[in-house]
Length: 121
Length: 284
Ligand SMILES: C[S@@+](CC[C@H](N)C(=O)[O-])C[C@H]1O[C@@H](n2cnc3c(N)ncnc32)[C@H](O)[C@@H]1O
Image (cartoon, rainbow over all chains, first blue to last red; front, side, top):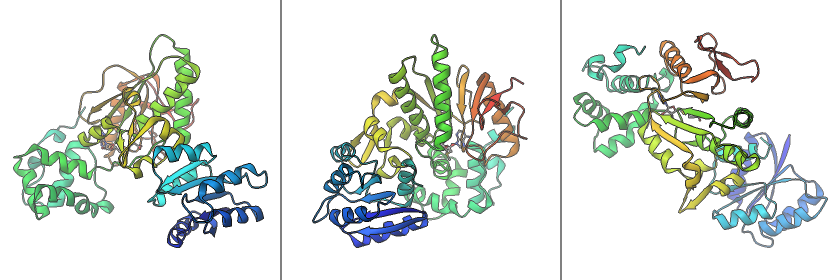
């Protein structure tokens, strides 16, 4: 079973994402900000991280940069999942090492499609 | 041959007393050959609600009445557009599209003097021809050679108009399209994503009914007709396969949707030995 870490400061979004991911056969864990997520990845790296942009404590972008510089944690596919839907944000995310990008609001098909693109569904 | 009853007006096919749903189903069949499977009949009303609203009508019977009265030709188009299944996505069945890309690449480089010709038949809002155009443009950029000509047709005028505009909603653009290709080939305009003119320019879009309208001119090296023919009657489907074969170069390839086949349906194509899952024109 593939594992996915859902990183979002909204409990509601985490719940929705968890539900969809579980129907896609993922084992899901959750984090409420980038720092929590980084700690989780140091313990056991998930296959995929679904990552919000704006969060307290540590943003998705800062999380991604920290994740990609460490050999221990660089493995997961990272799929941004955010309301930052402009071209500039998307480019920045890819330059920082994101594999895919989901523009909120999202539905099951979008998430499934993007996970297929990164070879995870 | 086109079966003659297809070209008769709907009210010649359907007695006036028949229920509204049958009128809609008959219209759809007459214009496109598509049969509404019994298990999808419930969708008719849902699909036609927006048409009712737009025309200021209250009931399905009134809408059927407008069709039978034949005063406004647009009402038929609206109903047909609403009833057609136009589900599509970018890079649908990615493995197959990648295979088509590889085949096209080899053919392209082997024929430096003429353009490869590709036909996307039943192209919906353009996701399929646009996916091919992206693949080909990237190949030409990487390894030179000539850009293939892409012809894209659909029976739905509304779908073709959308396809020509290259405009997709946030939901549509995220179906199957990798984000790197999205930002390379599309511009963000308001809430929508619009294909760059240099991509759209490579595709000739045209409204065309595969059952009855004249075929595009010339022969094609590769014809894609994916997820279009499964709700046609076996007789009509065979006729369309024969027509597709007439538009295909000898030895040219036909690409169908996942789960579709020509086996037992036509002698005009046979499974390709070389390219698993694709079909080649037999020339019969
Ligand atoms: C389900 S979509 C498939 C789109 C695309 N080929 C794909 O595989 O994603 C089927 C398309 O075929 C078109 N279509 C249905 N009957 C047709 C006909 N008789 N002639 C041309 N197009 C037709 C519909 O309008 C619709 O856009």
